[in-house]
Image (tube, rainbow, N blue to C red; front, side, top):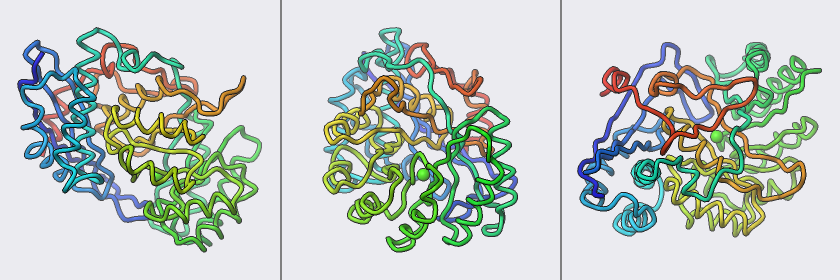
Length: 381
Ligand code: CA
């Protein structure tokens, strides 16, 4: 089998109402998708991570100019070999960021093709599924004004719970005092309901403020505290683990086996959060998962993209062993962004949805999803 073509699809959709996370205002949804065709008529899809502030054209250019010439004509089933070819060819100007996101997109598409060629889901090629469904957690609590929105956020928590979510991640990092007021309002609103919270500051603070926030929230039984400090400050992460009681999570802005090696060597995290669209794809996520396990670190993939990124994340979650085995081991959970996102809701013919508090993992060939081309055309740049 040979790769005959690689097409990049850059999609954008302006948001009716811009929202903020701690790093800035998000005004549009964007996505960098890749479509890999073969001489046997099998097509694979992949996606490069594009967070709200990242121009999707960067990864698109890396795919078009740096990676496409490497992959054209190759056998797409050689996922490990091609990953290393792409990584080695871009090492001197890549290793992190959008170049690795571009590798991720192609890698996911290659796994999609490889699994489709065997008529099995990707998780089958990865060694089988530990689980057929996963509990989703609601990601939301973005800001419309910025600060002083505690009452609205408390209502939002109730809305997620009424929709079936028992786990939810609160975006913080808008000033420690404002964060604490918001958490108090949310906790009060959900009292008596069976809800577990996580928090995510998107590395808004230095160590002192990050600790101050963590100590103030010590009584909330948080499942995790995500990105407390900047990704470069691996020692700061370790300090959070030493001085706070809740598990510390991070990794959505770290890349490949090599980046995660630094994170683990410093003892930075209890929970590693590779994003399939930026860590280096499924190939790299497997490397990272093995390394994490060897360090006693749990893995819980991060996802904030279109339906393709969601589908890749679900395949990885299916094949992910728990790090700390027991009869009632903590299973990975699935990030479910609850904000408006047309590429998540409409890009595939059967959207990934939560049913009775669970998300079924697609068991069809490859990623297990079918792209609606009309949606591609509608949002194409
Ligand atoms: Ca995050």
